[in-house]
Length: 318
Ligand SMILES: O=C(O)CCC(=O)C(=O)O
Image 1: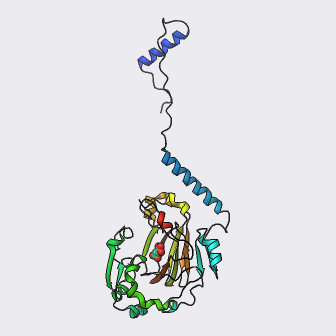
Image 2: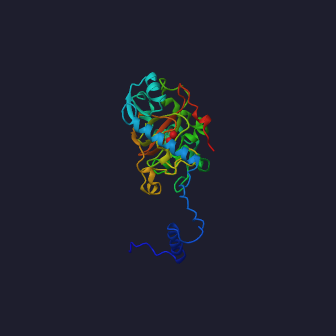
Image 3: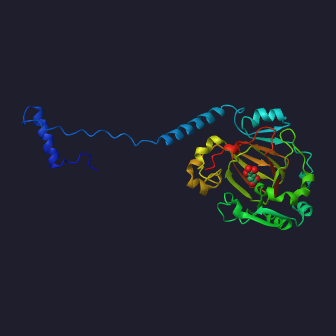
């Protein structure tokens, strides 16, 4: 391609000639010089957008600084963790931790198979989440997916796996009397928790809770089977397309198709843990998490800590 500048249009060439003549004293009274075109400033970023970019920068810088020390970042596993140590090292700083051994004396660990649960609860009618397969928004539209039926039939639905039916914490309020026979198999975790009851989750292999954060601090107590949990610090929020309530549009950071839609989530900082029976996992308020059952699984979640846990009260839900 030619590097020569395109030739000037005639009137522009004439003007150039006139100006050159004027500079050496020819050409009569000076015509007004053509107005210089001021360079355009780059399009202004709105104040709100700039404020958000600065906040994102701050989150990145702070996460980078925490990464300097394994004492300040990462996902630790602890055993024999006293209430004081839990408060100072994890609850107050808002740092997740896996705690082993604290459920060792729970009868449920040895008992809670699908058959045992069916014998204990029988045909009592329970509420659960159903019709989830094929619905992209089953967590957001929780009410639409509420189902009721005999516990025995629910267990038959989930024991073979799949994501269609899942008894979740959201169903807890409705299930107290029906599931009461199971309470005798549980112990308390007095170092961290009041005696407020936990919320039961029962699902099959493949049950999946998409990426979200909670508006309280949560303690997960895995009883039966295994669950894979991915945890993502709050500092990563700008990469997670957080548009709806507590959910991420990414949904699943292990799904290549979702990452193709949200490429900014590919390099998100994340921790992964496989919960096995008897494990506690502390998930601090604001930490993103997604959870996949890798087998038939039962688990309880607790929010009744000895320390304040009311972050949800000020949440700008929109
Ligand atoms: O176990 C699950 O499927 C989800 C648990 C969870 O997300 C929670 O307790 O906040």
